Image (tube, rainbow, N blue to C red; front, side, top):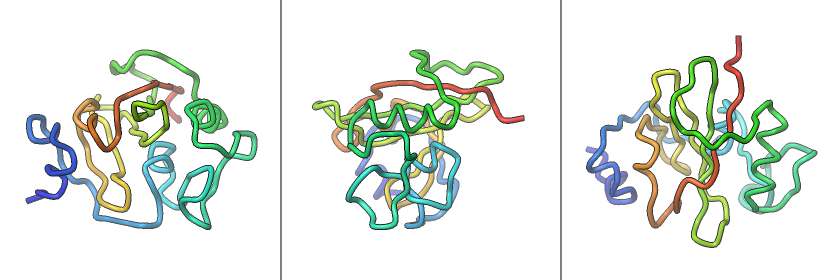
Length: 146
């Protein structure tokens, strides 16, 4: 059961997680974190039909990814704790500081991620840190939509 996820993300072996939707190639983790399950968000190269906010630089940098989330109402916030009334996004980066993944916090305090072309899961934030996604590099937040 989900052995492929446990192999890719060893942190899931020791923390609770659950698959919340099947694999889907239409959208990626960045779009999913932005509450968009219709598009593939990436600034360059990954997909020919990728979308990216016009005011964010089309480069794979933490500042560009931050700028993309700022366009949809997020602000930089260093705290990953649940904050009632706010939605948070965690940007992951590798050891060189290159963005690799994004996760969104749910109102329960758990986090949700789209794992590449694979499933969406609900998980503990740090469970995805490791060789593939690196580590949490930045947390952003915005007021929950009404």
